Image (cartoon, rainbow, N blue to C red):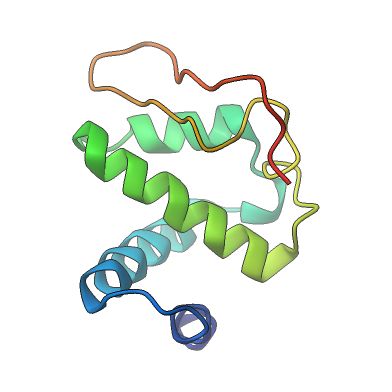
Length: 106
């Protein structure tokens, strides 16, 4: 799995800081989520909320996971085609809900 993560990171022109953050986040996600192929918006929300991260760290984590799922399973993964997932994710500490706009992510 680490090789696949490194392949994803090498396929983008991200800064070393972004690569490090994505590497740690994706590694944690893969270790903690038993079936990433089946995760949906609710499952991702629960996973994000299970960590005591700041809003900016959750934002990074969301995009790291989005990139990973696209790389691993393709753009038709159920999370990526959800009408609730797009570029306007707002996950703030203490919120009971992940606010996502209703635009579709492709």
